Length: 376
Image (cartoon, rainbow, N blue to C red):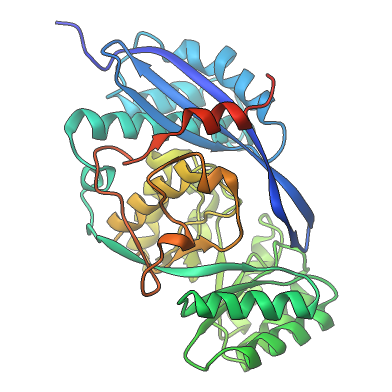
């Protein structure tokens, strides 16, 4: 008897959306965002959807998925997620990372969506974890911009019901320290604050900023130094009385394994649309749980499918701490699928609902998909 989840085709949709408001970080301005939506279609007609992070050059990602990865999958069972993951990983030799793992992520998420639909269960149940119906969320992110814009964004986040807020910081360090103190004065004492530097500092400047944050009672400092600077991370963890957060730039569990094992990180933040999909991101979260390190999914500038997959992981992970809820308008998150998930518009009492329908629990809006598609 034929397997109804035999893969018939893999379709990749490169998308681009212009943002209503330019987002500003230490690394520069972002007026538009790109992702790739992946569909895995089975012989039975059941289709799973996924998303891979492709901030720039999404058409190139789509061609890679279509021409290189799809032929490794067609004719095989969508049930065999780990075998398929390994087959795709074997496409290129050398260290794991880059476009390959991000492309795998989109396909892997779609395979989990298929598995949930076939079983009639949401993905969080397939993961067999904690099963939270709602998750705590934090507002992300207050821009690295002029004070008037920052003050307005903070006030809006508080009015929306957030009790946790993350702020972008950058260079020079003196200006970041001033911003840290400025934000602290804007919010009540019981509001938790974090800062995201987008790895703009060296360890010396990060130490100065981190000390100012600790003095102001901040909760965590995210990506203070470049991802590969493990010595810098160790130095900061040894000398700062504040959680060090990282992981959005990691591709596999091996990338963060040492820092997690040695408790250098207090918060691990993999992005499911980059970190090899649900299969590998779950491995990262489980490894962190084994070592007592908290897990907080990175969402960033991704789309709605990434948000849905991240909610399922958050619902299931034993060590989940908080969920990144982006507070700026992003058509890739707000208009690409239904129902709306992981967005401030559906925030209630600082919490976000986890999808309960089979699979990821979201369906694509075909009109929005066509409208945002770029030529490939």
